[in-house]
Image (cartoon, rainbow, N blue to C red):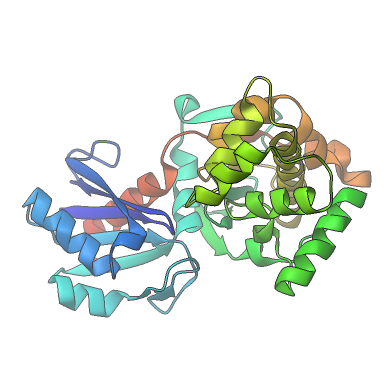
Amino acid sequence: MLIAGDVGGTKTLLALFTAEAGPRQPLARAEFVSADYPSLEAILRNFMLQTRRPVSFACLDVAGPVIGGRAHLTNLPWVLDEGAMQQTLGLQRVTLLNDLKAVAYAVPHLGPDDVHVLNQGEAEPHGPIGVIAPGTGLGEAFLTWHSDRYAAGSSEGGHADFAPADALQAGLWHYLFQRYGHVAYERVVSGSGLPNIYDFLRDSGHAPEAPAFAAALAAAADRTPLIVRAAQAQPPDALCAATLDVFIKAMGAEAGNLALKVLATGGLYLGGGIPPRILPQLDDGRFMRAFVSKGRFAELLGRIPVRVITCQAALLGAALYGLEQAAAGR
């Protein structure tokens, strides 16, 4: 029996799988607030006590690079080690995957009900695939074809330099450079990036901030959901709508960058927690205009299929990978 998990800076989702039921039919599942626990082991112990099933394997995707079986989460003070966790929890095998590698591993198994199409395009058979996922942070990954299947590769491309695409974004870069020193795309295109954009637009006088909304933001533990909801309200809050506009255009630009870097003729997939929540704004053309705005390569990018992942692909990928390892006896 396998525990598969999607471990993020905000929440941790765990589920129990068997080879017989497969990766889409968990026997049990539970969600935990990551920051409420001192370690991932503590969450796993809690889940194992809840389910009371004999478990031999665990495959966990984590929000951070995994090197030599160890991971230091980008947005949590946890250091994870496969061997130590295996011994502590009494499991036969513990596998750590970068969260975006897990999403990428799931992509070839996604069906029409698992995605929302932004650009139908025309996929090249066995062409490389790019995956970009704005959530708590910004994850990126890719897939390349090897012999008879896609192989997933992880990346930390979300921490590459943010490149402003217009004068407003240039002002944003300067604002964030003064605040952070280095301005990565994750400072803009992520759950933490949305409040950064909002602060810049407010402080630069781009639009007035409503006093009642300012008070609500000051009292919120997480400002991002409030900003998104206010941007989508009817009528929308002007400052929040401008914030979401900058976010969508920057996300489209970086998705286009990733598509160019891996030559993603097999498609570009948007994962993470934010894109499914802003589908109406992604459908209105702003994202795709920023995606294809690459000069001489605009036509090529316009042919690339672009889809939003609407299922929990990271958990699916971790389950697929873990069950495959268990079947192979690894």
